[in-house]
Length: 207
Ligand code: MN3
Image (tube, rainbow, N blue to C red):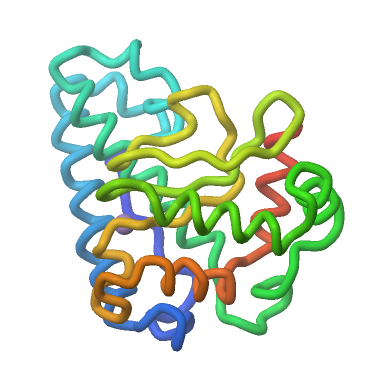
C-alpha cells in the first residue's frame, strides 16, 4: 500500500484571508504530493518497510537502511509534518478555531509559558529565527510543553518528542501572500489554528 496525500479537510479557500487559496493548492497538491511520491520511491527499494506509517518510519530513523535513510528522513518527515499541518488548521470562526485554547491544554500553556499571549510571543519569536526552511513546534516532553524548531522536514518524532502543533515556515507556505514577511505570517496563522484538534493531540501525547 503506497503512501497517499490525505484530502484537505476543508476547501483551498477556507483559510482566507490568512492563508490564500493559491498557496494552499500548491502546498497541498504539489509540495506535499512530491514528498509522498519521493517517499514511495524510496520504500520501493525496501518494500517490507511499507507496512509502517510515516510517523513510525521517522520515529526510528536508525532502523531505516542507510541507502534510503536520508530520503525517508526528508520525505517521510515531509509527509508526516504536512499530514499533521492540514488537520490542525481550520476556517477562522469555526468551533474551536482561532481564539484562545481552552480546557486542559489552555491550562497547561498558562502553567508552562505564563499565559497564551506569552506563549504566542515566544513561539513567534523562536520560529521567526529558524534559519532557512523548517518548522516551529509545540511539543510535549517529560510532563511539560516546550517550543522547539527543526530544520528542513525534520520531525520532533525523531527526537522522541510528541508534536502537539507545528507551523510550516518554508517559504512555500507563505511567500505568495507574505513574501519575506515571515513574522506577519506567523502572527496571522493563529487565526486558523484548530484548537479542538490540537487539544486531541495533547490528550494523546499525555498517554
Ligand atoms: Mn510545507
